[in-house]
Amino acid sequence: MIAALAFLFINPPTEQMYVNYTAAALAGATLGFLKYNFPPARIFMGDSGSLVLGFILATLSIGTSYSNVNNIALYAPILILGIPIYDTFLVMILRFKQGKSIFRGSPDHFALRLEKFGFSRRKVTWLTYMVSICLCSAAFLITKATFSWALTIYILVAIFSLGMGYNLSKVNMDKAKHHE
Image (cartoon, rainbow, N blue to C red):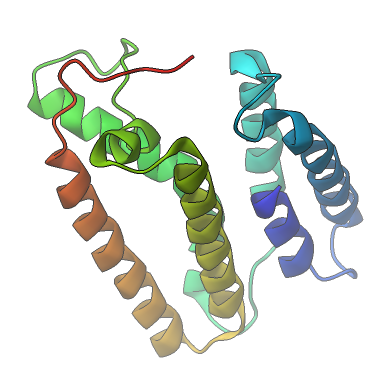
């Protein structure tokens, strides 16, 4: 929902209107689903639902230009979709370093690492929302900022991401509790 709203607010109404309509519809649909999926969840979306959402968000990301102010705003969608991108790369890097296949599933994603670190499921959910809002806000600022400010924001996000990745990599996931 947060990413869909970000695409809605970043895309000016005079550009590709399908981005606005699709982003608004997707935000509304996911908001309706959230009532049943917020911990303790009663309905789970599953892989099919999350893959469809990911595909629609990826399609939205290429449907607009991001700035007439600076060229590096082109990378704003990476921040908007930062949570799933970050989780994918974190898991791939950590599995590769451990000699595990990056294609096999295992309970070692960032949310489960935060749980193992001591956060409740609700706190992990709220923390994820807050980080996503911060990343989407940064993406919005990047589309309006000069090149030097946009580059500074990207660098700060990268430093934060690397620091979090380092700390999350230290969480021992052996015998990790995986809640379905």
